[in-house]
Figure 1 (cartoon, rainbow, N blue to C red):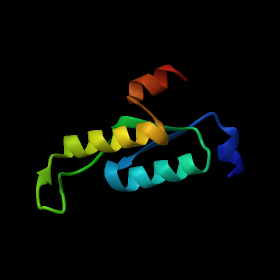
Figure 2 (figure 1 turned 45 degrees about the vertical axis):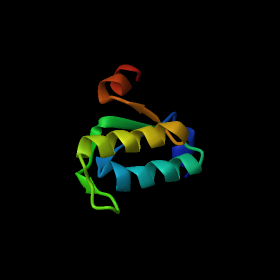
Figure 3 (figure 1 turned 120 degrees about the horizontal axis):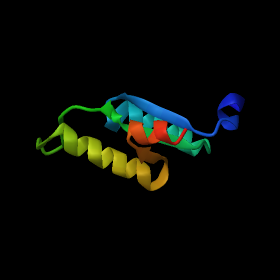
Figure 4 (figure 1 turned 60 degrees about the horizontal axis):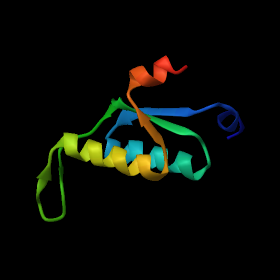
Length: 85
């Protein structure tokens, strides 16, 4: 944890925004880390809800990022992250 705590930010990228990415970001946020999500470097798949309605991947991705941005992370495009560092 110490090396992570001394860095300016932890940038998260990955597969299945609403699952693995979300879990990682929430854990980092709960640990008090400065978490940034590279939105365009994450993706997900179409997901069915409990009623069987199929939600397009784009909607699932956008909603997951919105949830994370409310409490756990800052969300940017990769180009914005690279330009700021």
